[in-house]
Amino acid sequence: MKLLSVIVPCYNEQENIRDFYDEIIKTGNYFKEHDVEIEIIYVDDGSFDETEKEVRELHKTDERVKLVSFSRNFGKEAAIYAGLKKAEGDYVVVMDCDLQDPPALLPEMYKAVAEEGYDSVATRRVDRKGEPLIRSIFARRFYKIINKMSKAEIVDGARDYRFMNRRFVNAVLSMEEYNRFSKGIFGWVGFKNKWIEFENVERKKGETKWSFWKLFLYALDGIVAFSTIPLAIASFVGLLLCLVTVFFIIFIIVRQCILGGDPNQVDGWASTVCIILFVSGVQLLCVGILGQYLSKTYLEVKKRPLYIVKEEI
Ligand code: UDP
Ligand code: MG
Image (cartoon, rainbow, N blue to C red):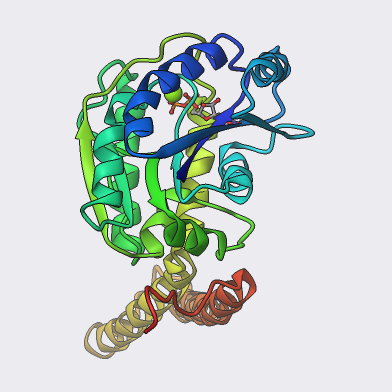
């Protein structure tokens, strides 16, 4: 018998706990036929409604339901990590509680990992139907920017809904960094990955836990976690400023030689402006150099593994 762990981060999802359970149990038959048992790990991310109680009730009637409960709201990323740590399964799948991640895809995902030799199956929405327009626009921009800035591939519309085998999960767990950005981490660890696309499903009950502001901060987190380019920007601007100043100085000298002094001008303004520009340029350049060292330190502090072994013979 193999075990499939279903990890469900929940934050104030009292209306969805039972519906989610029912839907997963429906796919249970398929898995039974394939000799796979299911455990459902609800991670209660510091909800202040009846989420925890609902899970406890389920646990009373079904031992396969498990609960990890946080002392306060630590965010979805922390909830995913806690779930992955707790999961004992040979296969692990991360799903949202609101049924926006269709359980109907599970058999296909299982097949890809168990039979077709993939290590993980990721999902992406092909549309953003039902989402506020502003949010979609910003989301698209974000994916464009982060993919330019980062080496890890971060796919537009990718969800956290992902089916993984044990070695993939272990690789994700080996990344113990504090500021977690799962979409980046999943891409970073590598392995053979399959993408499944589906149309956006609207939330069944309750409402989204992500305000525009929360998403914006999350996007910044993602960029900072997977790119050190912002630190290099200072260098670039500084260098540019220095170059511009040099041209400016040459221009002023040449003008002075050809046209001579201008009686209406205050003496010394040109040299003052040049000095200010040049010195600010040099300062920015130095800040940028500091930034480069800082970025190296930042990467060291994260203690990411140097490599991830796929297989040893
Ligand atoms: N969630 C969580 N902690 C949070 C915010 C959200 O565990 O601080 C969970 C939430 O309960 C849900 C999933 O993350 O199961 C996705 O959240 P939501 O549906 O609100 O996001 P959306 O689908 O709108 O992007
Ligand atoms: Mg949702």
